[in-house]
Image 1 (cartoon, helix red, strand yellow):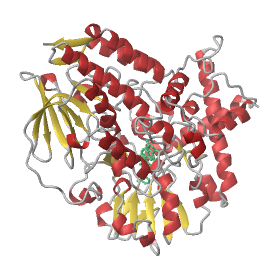
Image 2 (image 1 turned 135 degrees about the vertical axis):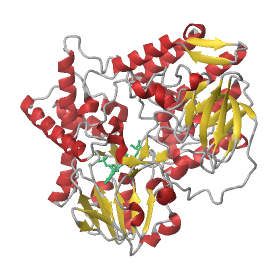
Image 3 (image 1 turned 180 degrees about the horizontal axis):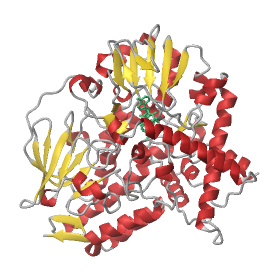
Image 4 (image 1 turned 60 degrees about the horizontal axis):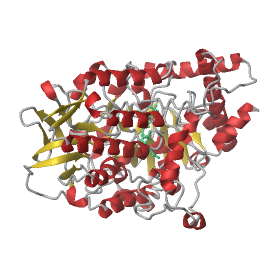
Length: 595
Ligand code: NDP
């Protein structure tokens, strides 16, 4: 049966990117009314949530100051290291020291760029892996693909899905190997990046009083760098301990959570982070209350320790070959995914939606199989199309809810709306706890995070984007010469973000190389190529109104109206790479240079 085949493919957990490209040739033997009924239920669940929080993204705050300041503090960096303010000039400045910077620097050096600086908010490199040290943290992408430069550093990860400490260590390994530490200024946040037309330089200011000038600036601050909190009434009034998941306080919990023995813990949120944290806290705490607003999709993880025999037999070029396979399979025109010519577009969408629903219903059946309590099982079932929210993969999360010390507090889309000095309140019931963990996510980068970016003519990048994001490849935006954005919108969607970052790093390095070699002082893009890319993004964002039809979450800006261009480029990674190469091939055509 086609359905069974589709599910068994998925159950192998083979390749997440394939999951989003459900087979348009899919045929089901169920009547269409079955699917229409489920779609109606999806719509009801979405409307319920939108009605509870019509304020969209404004339901959250990432201004973590005053009473909320401790939610943003760095628990890992130790004391602030005093230093003199920096007032100098570099050629290339990165805001952020995560994988974006680590991957780009090697290439820049190859091209002879020596004057490079990283300005990083944390006290070490690693970016997301510096901050996200919560128990259970791991990457959902196979480590043999996600961890870059494995062959160069002669390293094979210990597991199929590497845990956070191993990934963080790998970031440090890259930084040591390529002497990147010498370039970094830590515990420093860039607050403004302003173009000076006379000098043809960016002026970069920081929260440490620095005033640096840079010929080129690379926004390498990651797509989700700033923790956010739901604006729940009374958060500061809580008398127990509370922190955000990305600022885990191991002094309070103990390194192995041993100090949670005897403690009552609340976790707010059930997104990708909470799914990883919950099983760990459940093992340690006396009582765990999980406050759920919308359930996640939980698929099989299928993790294993790396087989040393397999690792030994890897041939030179193995990681690049894996990457090439991922690129080839991302092509929507590849024979496997190509739609038969005689299928009209609406029929294609209908078939994909039906396949998607069958998959979600299979996730429901998995919940029924695992969860003993019927009401809890019903509460854990997601009612939205797969990929409306970030999918998750875990083998321990669901069984955790069979433990007698674990309590799912299903808020039926409403969420926790009040915290008192003793704990969260839902439907008038107080849950007294000692610790509240806010696993409520991160602000999503549209432009710079923490950072105001002001280009030619004094225009802030957010203001430019107010009628829709405008870039070329998600990297360049007209009017912002010598500025490059990594991991932003309008770049290719790839579940493995390091694949995208390495392509972007190579592209940016090629642009800088060309500019230098030709004796130019600035590189910008033409308005025409920018408009062309915006249309390209729109064309590939599909004919469905998936964003509007989805349950709210950060993928669809919490259901706010957004232009179709405000998202990732969905034309496939291969096409994205080809486009990057195409524009690099004739730089004088699509770029504007000044001597
Ligand atoms: P998310 O934004 O995905 O989740 C936030 C959660 O908080 C949601 O479940 C949300 O509910 C819930 N929430 C917000 N306000 C309230 C409230 N008032 N009451 C109850 N619940 C509330 O953040 P995460 O940190 O989980 O994940 C962010 C991203 O980080 C992931 O999507 C992923 O991209 C990345 N990540 C990656 C991992 C990896 O393997 N590489 C691992 C972990 C995270 P609702 O759904 O209703 O909005």
